[in-house]
Length: 620
View 1 (tube, rainbow, N blue to C red):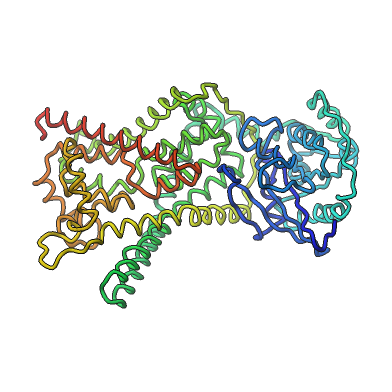
View 2 (view 1 turned 120 degrees about the vertical axis):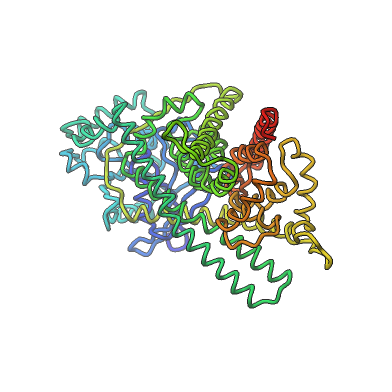
């Protein structure tokens, strides 16, 4: 192999929680790209590494796996890539198997499986600093003899902690082409082999760290552990909502200023409207979600790196399994209360494809913050503000009921999907509980950058395109010169709204509501401003629009119509951003269509029942 002209390919393999991704970040720095493997939604991470010799290497970070006998899509991809069988992916020239020095009893078993592939291989003995602190003594030379492959100590979270590994790779790779593959017979019992290796090369005072045992005594307690988890999740939810709000307001204000500047510079016309109402508003509608996504993923990555996230999944698994989900579904569903977009993206932490898909499909039923302006408008107009039972605010109880209905519906839907899916087998949650450790800031920063770019590149394009399409429907054709109605009434969207009124009449919706539902496709909260536009009101923001709308709708709509619209917003798939994210995360138009279809059907039926019952009770 000519190292000067050929880029050698290295594949990093290892168990989850081995520090493999941290080592990948150490080796490649910022010279990496993230995509999906062809045809699936599993992340594909590849980077470039330049050794001190000047040679350049392509480094592939393979999905974490516990075995090459795959029990998940991640493990199947890792197996096929290691063997060189994955379509469209060249076979790696050499493998770097990353093992956790504090947990060799588990990780060496996988290293033995990888060794049996017969490819050039180096074992990266990672986290040796943590092993030394626990009093674990590892005879590297003896371990190397027992495994029959080079073993190199690494500390992936320390600067230059992989320099020895880079030097060993650089010395080995020029000879790879002429090296005879190691002849290793498959072992009958890897567990027995690991026990022999540990006896020969490792001295371990205890199987687990004292600090881990002390923390797990409380954090895995069936009562104290759940209370602690509730507090942690509450703080995360508050942070996602509260910390992101000033940043989101700033982004909205910035794009509003930019739109006003462009609008005042260009003469009125289609070009100005396209730039201001289509492109600038569309880009702003994409970027406004970024603070929530980054804050949410900061906490998810920190909890995962600290070792707490697997414990949270363990605590909740039995409860979630009863509804056809898994313990790992909890955080994505909780975060969907802020926004379903980052919630759906965070399902990447769910390894089981079936559980991940179920979580994605029910996440839109969580009551996201974008629904609050509509809820506040309708509750304020129709629900009297009075105290119930001497303690509770009646309007607050209605709002709580809407949230509870969303949660109950999500659990009911996931339970129903469990009954009808083809795979009836139970998939138990198998988790490694890694040692607790402090998250490393560099890895958090790299992870946040990756998630931010994934959102902007994969989801942003679809949102922007659909927003521009929506602008077109709202803007053309223009109102005639002698128009007496709002301009939206004469647009394609207005005509669609009038046609929709026939279909939505059994729900109590008038044509004004139907028209407002169309701009609400861009984002649910737009419906308040859209109603103000339809009623020919001029309002600077949602609060002003709500104040002006309240007397109009309270006089013009029945209580049954208001209740029907409230129920509609529990279910309706009215957010393009959410549907675009479902398409990207499932890589399937079929799954996106199914999500939109069942949510629309549920919204229509629930609103129909609500309206007809309310009318029958005299609220019509």
